[in-house]
Length: 161
Image (cartoon, rainbow, N blue to C red; front, side, top):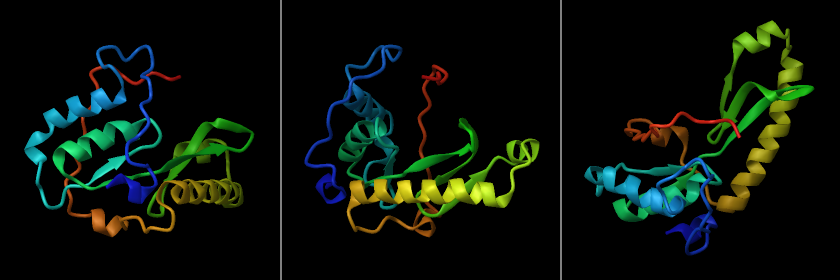
């Protein structure tokens, strides 16, 4: 199933960050997550979306155990010019663009500045999509409408790395 997305036959095992105790690796985390989501196995509209890179081994296990197709959902941050770590928005697979109006207004960023960053990030996102999928099409955002997303949140708050 995954080879059609350029993942090979099995995803690489990636070690977990030190602060994520309790799992052997990301694949173990995926198997445990799939066990919690087993009630969704066989659902006809089920689609597992992975956030590369670390999310792919987790999602692979979920998709395999639930018998669901797997795809990647790519996201790129739109960094403020000159302060790339400060996000003014994000773009994602399917042509999604979300802007943080508070940051844009506070820094008086105009559409030209936003557009220049967005154009560069769209190019990078497209290159990433090609490396994961080749020329295979991605599910259109419209195809995802009506599907119920399933999210499992860690008990531990996310930490900045």
